[in-house]
Length: 283
Image (cartoon, rainbow, N blue to C red; front, side, top):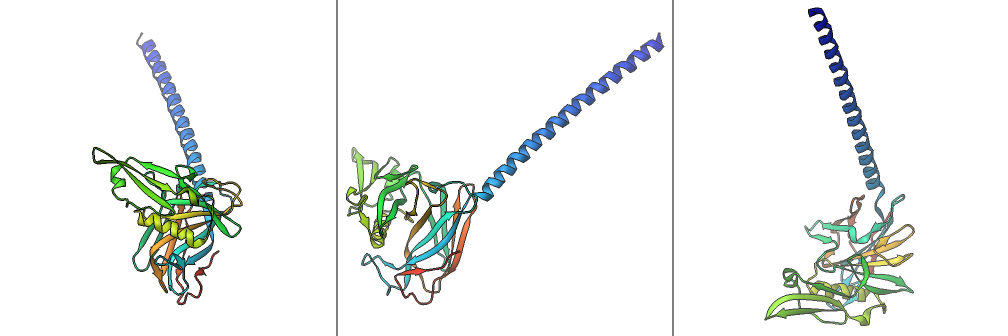
């Protein structure tokens, strides 16, 4: 009887060992499969990040005089910078509203040109026949926005009551208390041929209204007006630099799309600025 019980106990233990081993093997297989899937996903994300990006093919510097509102080759100071960008080989389309630009200088100045969810920071236009046609603000995934209402009074309090040929600011009050504001483009400048000086006047107006680091997105060769940079297209991103970069000053520009490769370009402002528009090089 004891011998029979011993054999039965041994059989039960053996079955338990087999079941445990099978479960463990299943766990190992599941874990290995999960890790493999995660590794593949991570690899795909990494590959996407590596292949998503833009390249800077040319860099221009502008001597814009904010006192006269004109380009001025006697200024001897770069107050506007314009990298020309296109997609890097193999990159998919890039939403220009998901691109951050950071400009740093050897004099310690830092400029951040980025879209905002609260206020428009950029204007969009295309080059046509030597002139620039402005479509509107680039805002909320659109390139032809003429009016932006802001319900955040903290943002409104940073704005200045300005009105000129390019933009105007409206403030709304309830019981003498600020409730909202709006930033508006004068419709008279929409689709009208503008010079590069007038584009800088536009950006200067935005800056004087309280918008920090305004910039323009100008399509040089585009398939369709949209927030996306696609294959074969070229854009110039024109940054307004009110404090200016002086001769021999070093700078570094980094343009980074969300989840993408950062394009960088750096150098020094030439010792002598002979022209109002200066080529600063390119790839």
